[in-house]
Length: 259
Image (cartoon, rainbow, N blue to C red; front, top):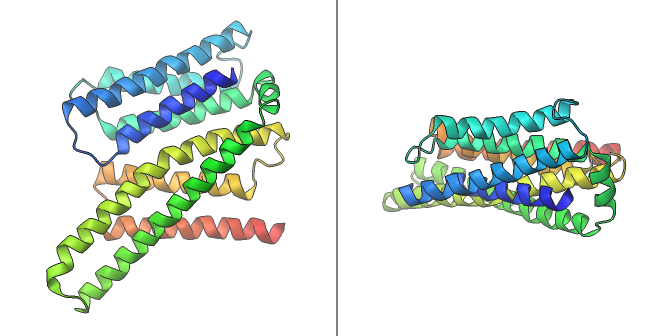
């Protein structure tokens, strides 16, 4: 079960990366995104099938029904979209929902948890992903802060007007690129972190590492989906990133004080 879950998580993260990547939206890229998401959906269905063979009915618990609902969201996206109309916001939302739901269904399985206890490599993978993801999110926050500082200096005529367009556009694109790269990493960090936390009976489910990964993941998804749906970019996207980073720091500080 655990190797199959890792394949599902990797496939959904690859699909999410292809959906949020800041590249020209050609028909070939749209086909690639749909193909990767379809592969993830097939693997997800295989997880549901293996759970049924193990005697776990898809509607026997909330976690299992969530997994089925996540898969239905992906299937519904394919029913609504077409080969040339990817509908990225819908696909991204369905991908995140499916990843969260299949993770919940797997960690609720005692056999999967027992298998995870025999896999110490999972903890090392989670720590590596969380470290890279948090570092990338910190970099994105720094770029956002620099963007806000540059914009303020331009507004106050502290920089030459000739550098206004290129500098701000370049920083905005860099910010988007960093967020697009770290979001799939965060997704894997959260998925593996939940499994690792369940290994200890849930005692580390709300550890600082897991909380930071979840908070930064939600923040990066909010930035990317806001840009895809409402066209949020520039100053507003930068402020959203900075405020999200401050929120994560407040949560980490709270856990630090409690500890």
